[in-house]
Length: 368
Ligand code: MG
Image (cartoon, rainbow, N blue to C red; front, side, top):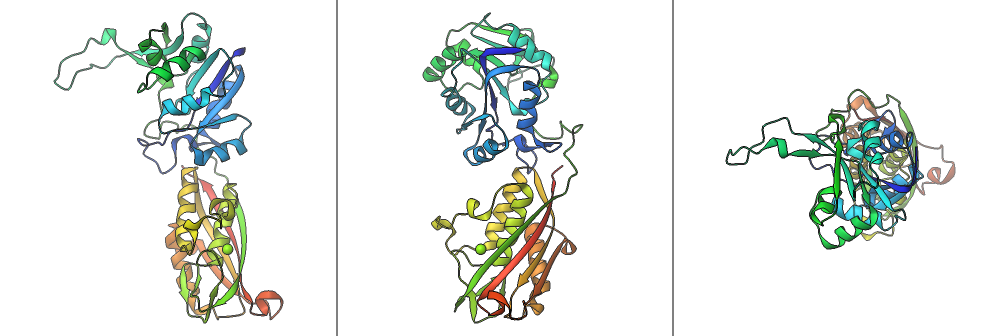
């Protein structure tokens, strides 16, 4: 069904504060798709809108833009602020605002909401309350009069803009518009339109079991008098590696391999040389931040293999400690991380002893 006077806004900029998983809720995987993409695709398979806007945190906006062709509005501190940002790029008369966290909302519920377009300033699905509701003091509330309001909610864009400009602190559009004197209407909701709050609810649609592979390469020139760090381990040497950071070429190659497997770009984009916060930084810290990021996006590291290419110093005595340290940093068993060292038989820049290079391969899977 086509709704050329409706813009679809998918709210996906939440911080998952109540979510019991290291993966951010909107990046939980359904197959290989993040939840927000799954939620949008499901709705767009049934309805056609003037435009689709996905809200995303500033840190995630770049990736949402790269993955999809939807317009992206950067999220603010609150849902209301994200909505305000999204409304700046809305041109249609109506907006249908849905939550990525309500990814399993039955299509019939969305159809019921859309069917009432024009009947009120804001239309939302709602459910009767079946539990006994009491106040803190044990006073019973009249549950016949209470409703649990869900999304998606269809609102007149103008009414919403006006209400948002005047009032704040509301958790949804219908309540806000009602408080502003607008006409609201409720249609029958559905338990399946509930929010994923604590994880586990989407279990029937498990993430993909695919193994994702990435490779990385890095090289740094020697610098006299600097400590030499490889795989986060101090290696006795008269030379360290010249770099903006501590110069740990092995960890840099590993970070690029991990980002490669996750399809999340490269180390230079994530930790730019131009950013003074990374000056002299311990590369183990960069690796920890990388792992934290890919975890939020729904990935986990399953294993890594690293080759360090150096004519000097002799690395053999340090390999076990390097593996142990990387296994610890990646929270993996020792056997899942391998570190190899080779020379290039005096050939090339490493052979001439000008510096050290490293190659890495990482295997990632989806979190479940
Ligand atoms: Mg580097």
